[in-house]
Image (cartoon, rainbow, N blue to C red; front, side):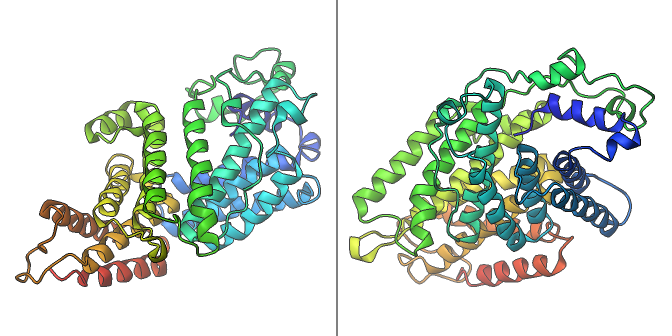
Length: 430
């Protein structure tokens, strides 16, 4: 959701400016800088005390909050302010303050609405350049996606529900940022500072990655379509504690809609082949992350749908379908843990989804109504393949092992998760 070239240009321009110009810099832009420093610190691998790293990260995010206040962001919202707020929400989640993120996200959504980010810029932004229209679409998608899937995790009402923005309006045209080109005279690299700049990207990282735009459009559109579907079929009904479907036919049709959407995603995003994902993580970790995040969200939501019950409409929990979906969802986290360990240790949303999937598996195995009395230590006799039961139970055991490491920065949350999952695991009668 951030124009990389423009961000690099603004970064270089700020740090190469004399102090008097720094004092008058756009505070919302500085808030975006500070929260990127904060999140970068969360993902850093340092040999020092983890508590010290946490304190440094929280110092940076505090500076981001302060910069937003200086910019009067509540009365003068801007794209940099919205971008900073999105990242602050993710920072708060990763810092084990999900309830704070939820509250702050409410302010974020109000500001996005105030800016009209939810409206089609082709109809309501006639004087806006193509580049800015593209940027507005990407930022709205980021706001709405974050709200939708935090809603799924916390089981609270969604707020990003009003928009006439079409997913296909986000085209594959590369961003052409005129402000960047005008300020530097070129679009091929960061501006040349007026004097030696120790904070320059080239000084800090002599061989930086290319600043060419990364073609993430397929990923953005795929996530956007998934979020639209999830918001309508899961978030809104659960907001009022309603069943997701009225009858068995509606449930079957909804599952078919989800499967059709999943099959429409590019193969690089929906493949579940472990070897393919491993190669992708080694050669293109950005694409691997996109694959894992999309799969995790999709299969988690399919698990919720498979578990849906409505006695009045004759809708029953599909235990086999729910177990299979939960296993595919938690496998995405296992692959993140195996191939991108740092990411797995930081992303709260991914960790919590995996925890809920393991908890769901445990409850399904413990409460399967089809099972018959069996010998101790043996899986139940049921209509489902025994291999599915055994594999699902092994997934829960693996998640318990991982919980010994994930969340170590928040020992109370780690202990709670572990105790809850272990209790549910021990209730499996075989």
